[in-house]
Image (tube, rainbow, N blue to C red; front, side):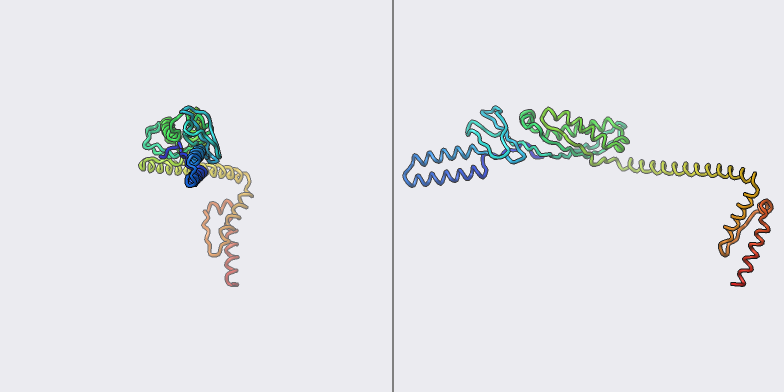
Length: 294
């Protein structure tokens, strides 16, 4: 992991250009015999080049005077007093991301899991970030890993798998509370992956399959019950209405005989109760007469 505290030194395009100009003028004055002017020019321009600093648009520089904090500079070009002033570090205020993970961490129901996560954070107070903590990026990584382990230990495996977003939000709030005194805010935490032991994954798959089969059987049983209730209701209606029963029998016979080459087997009791014998004979006779004509 790279150190988050960035230092640039005195060298930048502007200071290097001034230093080259100082050397050139000093040599020119020396060749002309102006030794004092040559020394003055290289000293003045050298100090001027050493006082120039440049911070990028997303950075702020921490300036110390004789080791004491005096303020922040940047972005852009700024000047310091050579020798007595120094730029301690340049703090990046862009949103950054750190990946962290917890390996073989036990859940509340003692299941070992591996969890990979990421945290997005940014520095909102440059002074606190530079003065309150030595290396805030490393501190955030350790706090995030510790917080993730604590969160895993407080939840069961089923909760981790089903409520990943809520757990990530709780972890983000926890990290933000701990990093806020450093001038850092944790904006978002995302859980990338939760890996469980292969044997447990296979057992959970079998359990889910068994649960799906149970639900299917329950649904089928419910459907059979509803169908039986409908049949019971229909039988009561047919008992009190022989004409309806007769029409229903005719419809069933028609549906069975309308397909060419089909044969319908009907109980004798049904023939007698619904007078289907004569109807069936007429239908068969009609069909027999149609075949020679074709």
